[in-house]
Image (tube, rainbow, N blue to C red; front, side, top):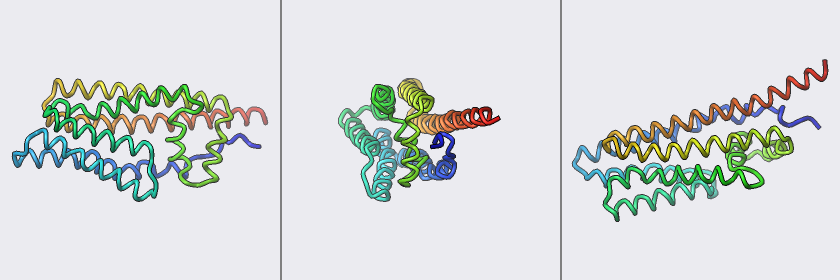
Length: 224
């Protein structure tokens, strides 16, 4: 049987950024616009910050309804958003409202790092959703890649990189909250988040494709 690491994942990955467009609008643009609209009409900063979490929560519900099933990561996102909003209102702290997402990003980073101790790391499953979608044949192909040591190594490297980046992002959110105004944090935080996500996707994709290209070169050298 041919090494499945030489199978091209291009068809399923081609529309990754197109799939991210609704997220960029709902999770980044709408919270910023909502914050400035509410504060312009003299809504307290705390309430405006909490309201900014409504569009991302609704977006997660939209994904659940569209997919017809509950995704564990989506459940975690909405749960942390709800708990963060409630805690912000109860505490009455603008600072806590600004850093509540650090709890989510930090938790995700720790989940990635702790999953390195599991039989398969977290990013193996997350990337599989983009590379294989719901196609049973492609899911079987993706699962079959795990038998190759270099693929296992690279998946663990990718998972470790994601975990470290999200831990750094969580810390930077706290720094932003301590040094910037709420209005500046509302802009800087989501831009940083989306920028980190895009950078991680591009790097992960190139890093894994390099494995396929390396395997192709080795097979070509063996034939010649």
